[in-house]
Amino acid sequence: MQNVQTLKLTRTKEAVFAAVFTALAVYTPMLVHHFGGAAAGRIFLPMPFFVLAAGLLFGWRAGFVTGLISPILSFLISGMPMAIILPFITVQLCAYGFVAGNLKERFNGWISLAGALLAGMLASGIAVLLFSKMNAAAYVFSALKDGWIGIAIQFAALPILAYFLKKYLADEKNI
Image 1 (cartoon, helix red, strand yellow):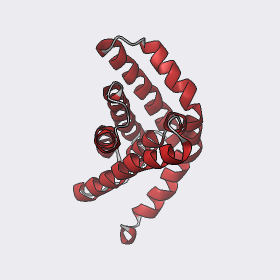
Image 2 (tube, helix red, strand yellow):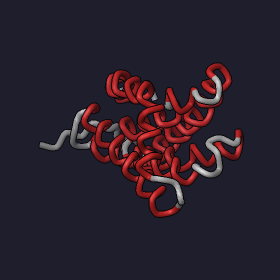
Image 3 (cartoon, helix red, strand yellow):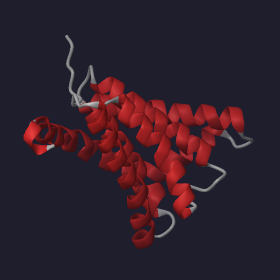
């Protein structure tokens, strides 16, 4: 059974929403760091939140583009994420957005989110393993240990938020 649950938008609207979610993914971590300190980003995961939301709401293209552009733009503006982990964060976020969007076309929000989170962690672990001298398992374990609160927030909020935003945005007069 085909369960298409992403919004069907024109390419222009899809690009506009990807740009909005990219801006949110860049700006929100700055707010979190400002009010919560340097470690708050690793705890609350504000950038992945909006990348995953873009994938769940608008499909794999918007999710992938948001995941690709957000960390690079954030680094250019704020210097975060740090240059040494920027490639790994970029790979992870691209996987998050791409997989969330692809899975959302066939599954509900929670399954899509779980699959995207697993794929993103696996992708970043493989990137660390192949392209750095860091311990890939320690890198992924550290990300999970530090980010469990953000992951819990994503599971609690994203599928529900995506459902209601999708309902709202499905009405042509609202967009």
